[in-house]
Amino acid sequence: MACDIAIKIKSKMDAAEAALNSGSTPDELESIRIDILGRNGFFSEISSELKNVPREDKPEAGKAFNEARNRFTELFSAAGKRIESLRKGTEKKLRPDLTLPGRKHRVGKKHPISRVIDDCVNIFRRLGFIVADGPEIETVYNNFDALNTPDEHPSRDPQDTFYFNDGRLLRTQTSPVQIRVMQKQDPPVRIVAPGRCFRRDTPDATHSLNFHQIEGLYVDRDVSMADLKSTLLFFARELIGSKADVRFRPHFFPFTEPSVEYDFSCIMCGGKGCRICKYSGWLEISGAGMVNPAVLRNVGYDPEIWSGYAFGMGIERIAMIRYAINDIRLLYENSSRFLHQF
Ligand code: PHE
Image (cartoon, rainbow, N blue to C red; front, side, top):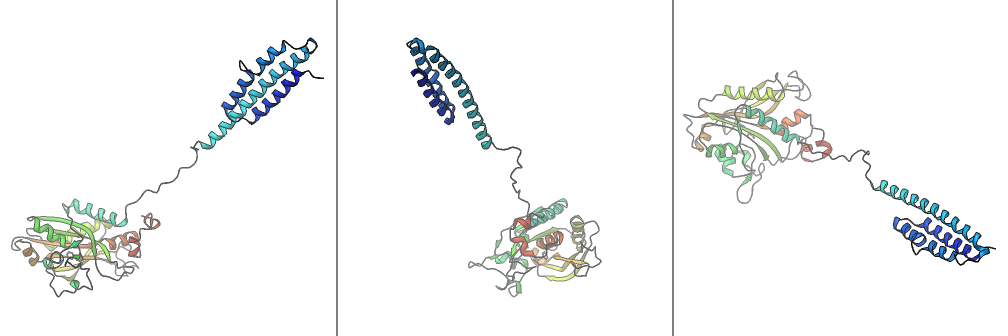
């Protein structure tokens, strides 16, 4: 029959084993270690008790004690390894896996309208034009009267233009920037003015309540229609290709005289005729002409000394042709799926 002390050792070791197996932190292990191996721990208690063991029990008690010490050392180191691998496992789970593919951040892109504006401005800059700006809310005077557009002109109709109660309006064209610039400075003037305009159109694939134009104005001595045409030709060739051509068609604008509408040769077919140009070989861009002397007089320029040309063009029109966009409304919907194509 086992002696008392051997029984005591066995039951303590069983308890220690259970504690080591369930411990999950280094601190727990350490307190078990102190409890068993510490200066006032279980083993030092047992070794002093061993002295009082009756002689005949000594071999058994001594053997039990030695075995217990070995057993504890093994159990303790096994528990240490288990806890260490546990820690590594959670750490691995918490640590970001740098080999995974990154999360994609969609970088914004320049809107096709902004791109066309920037391209146009850069071409005109090289010809010495500087950029001018004006407000989208304009006076009736700048948008119409100063531009020689009389009261009875249809574009002044509330059907065609957005008016505010105070008499101002959302500009229908970028042409009022011409007036603002000429009122402020003496000739010569050489500006381009890109910006947003508004008209009471019913939206469809080619019409929008707001749209963009870029206006050009050149006033100097002896400016001629030939200057206008060569400028637009240079512009067309820079914008759409060296083979581009420009044609003028007679037209009417109150603020230019003579006035034209101008076309660029079709960029799709080069002028042969295709679906894009409706088989005409030409793409309508916008209006232009020689600045009407009445407009020069309105801003205090002497038309006997100064002459000039002006032109406007539709930015959406150019963007739609260039990027083959078939509905103007797509340009304003802000769908990133659409915009990321350009
Ligand atoms: N402002 C005119 C329009 O919106 C275009 C234009 C500009 C015509 C300058 C002549 C000169 O249709």
